[in-house]
Length: 243
Ligand code: NAP
Image 1 (cartoon, rainbow, N blue to C red):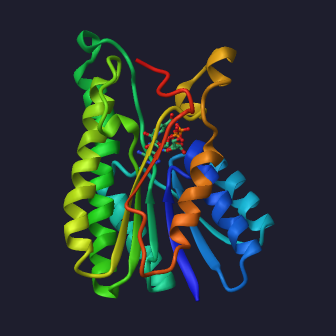
Image 2: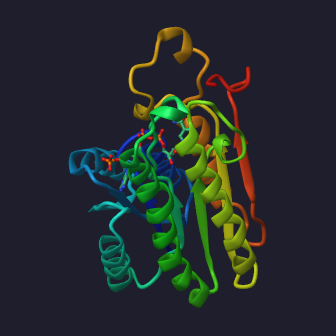
């Protein structure tokens, strides 16, 4: 059976690593045939990731879209359903962050952060969960952050958005348990990805890598359907590195 798996923010960083690890699992595991639906706003990134996935024999579909635009998300979900008739997994990974002192944030920073992390994640989840409720199967991952439950001084808006995502996870789980849908909250600490911009060498040395998170996410999806890992928390072994 094909597994239709949507990964938002699949062009870079953690989302890219998750897509590639699903493709590797298709290569290594007889009978696992994922259709990887790769979503982000930058087509060349998606083309590169799709090519890597196809090298492992996985089917990859590219959808250039902005999760903050509700109409684009509705169109994408409709297209996927028209084409495949089901959705087995949604990885809510697309996310953004701006980091500065509390007093320096602007209204534009608020809009930038919340429209993707909160509004986009909510409406895509609402749409896909409705389909999974009818199917009585599915798995939704949220790549939130340790900042979904720990405060960092330079992360006021990012923490607000990630605490909000955790709120959605916990409400959604109440519905999901009634219809055989699995929900996993993935909370990483610092992972070396393009989100961080230029990172000094000494900091790079203590950060996690995207594959430290992506491998366990794929392993969690492949658990027997009777079991769900509800939370995965990852930190650099020396603890959080930002303030
Ligand atoms: P990244 O390297 O900046 O990659 C983010 C991906 O999301 C990109 O492909 C980006 O592509 C896409 N994206 C952003 N906004 C989007 C939108 N509105 N619509 C569609 N795609 C969008 O970030 P990352 O570090 O891998 O982070 C991935 C997730 O992990 C985020 O939710 C982040 O908050 C979370 N996280 C990261 C860390 C970390 O230390 N890196 C730690 C904890 C949690 P385009 O810009 O081309 O659309």
